[in-house]
Image 1: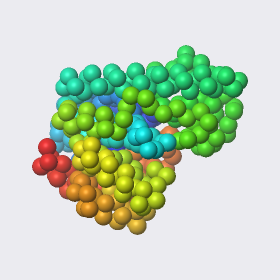
Image 2: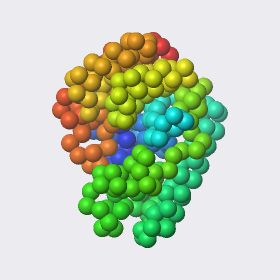
Image 3: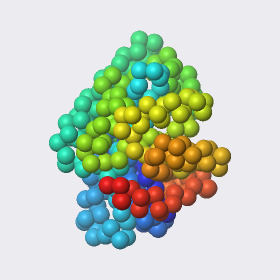
Image 4: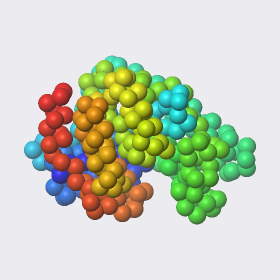
Length: 284
């Protein structure tokens, strides 16, 4: 069993990198990709922990990963690109990650200013304290507003204020899908389209999106994901075959921030085949 899409406390997960490594070993995963949003801080902590504890690749293969929120001109929602097997020491990646981080900071400041203008009690300092200095995502905005009593559930915040296309949604400025895909490839990694069924597109729209991303250099698509029905899995496998894309998959594990979604097994029916990893290694 493998899981190629997970998050830690370095972004919007609730498991520390060390806890996630221990949990992956306890669940007998063969491979784990840490794919925090716009940061490799959790990955670096996990690498250091495995080295300190003498955890070998035979016990658990830890894959360098990241998840980037990107934009395309035709769409009013974020498109998530996961990068796997990235050379995190590559100069292109180091410089690109700085640009991505700065763009996220600008986006967050704009969202904070808009919320303040509508009498929400929120500041950058308060949000950073709430996020415990991890990379701030929209999930942190949502949980903060719930904590302050404005909403009962985080999903209500997304549906009302900050979800794709909502009143306080702010698109990324400097992180296009093409930029993200090219950055991942320059850094020796494999760019993956994350959870394609979550985008508000019909079948034709999704085919068009994948076709455009393929022209940018997309190399893989998540054909296995915690929220897919069996029919959706078959549909994603068909798209992978049609566009000659590698198959990928994962739980999108966030710990307590996504209740019921477990590492490796998702909501109980997820099983990402080991053979996907073999194909990726052959591709590199």
